[in-house]
Image (cartoon, rainbow, N blue to C red; front, side, top):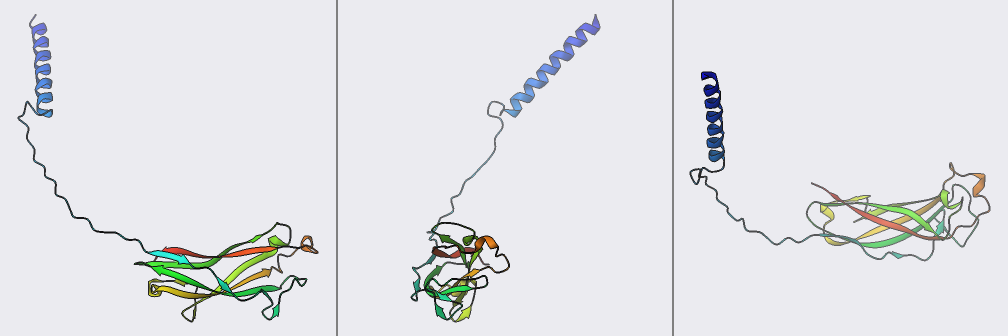
Length: 181
C-alpha cells in the first residue's frame, strides 16, 4: 500500500507545485512587481506639398505634320497632328519629383481608326527638354511647354482603318508624383 500513498503523495505534490507556479505567474497576491514608465514626445505641424497642372493655354488648332493647319484633311498612316500648349505647373514639397506624360486620347466614338491614333508629348521645363521634374524645379509655379502629338501609327495601320472618321475630344497631360531622394 505504500505505492498507493506514494502515488497520491506525488499527485498532491504535483498539484501543489502547479498551484504555486500559477500564483507566481499571476502576480502572487501582490508579490510580483514590475516597473514601467511612459514619456510623451511633442508633435509638430505637418503640411503637405502640392503637385498640380494648370489649365493648358494652346495655340489655335492642330497642325498636320508640323506646318499645315489641320482643317480635317484626309490623313494617312505616318501623318502626325500636333499642338503646342503652355501649362502652369505647381510643384512644392521636399523630395518631390514628377513624371510628365499623356494618357490615352479620348474620342467621341471608337472605331478601327481611333485604335491607331497614338498620343504622345514632348515637354520643355525652364528651357530644357524634360519628362521628369525634380526638387530643383520646386519653385512654386513653373511653366511647361507641351508639344502634343497624335500619330496615325503607320506600322500598325490596317485596311480596316480606311475611310473612317474619328473625332478627337482631348488628350490628357499628366504629372505623376514620384519621391526623389
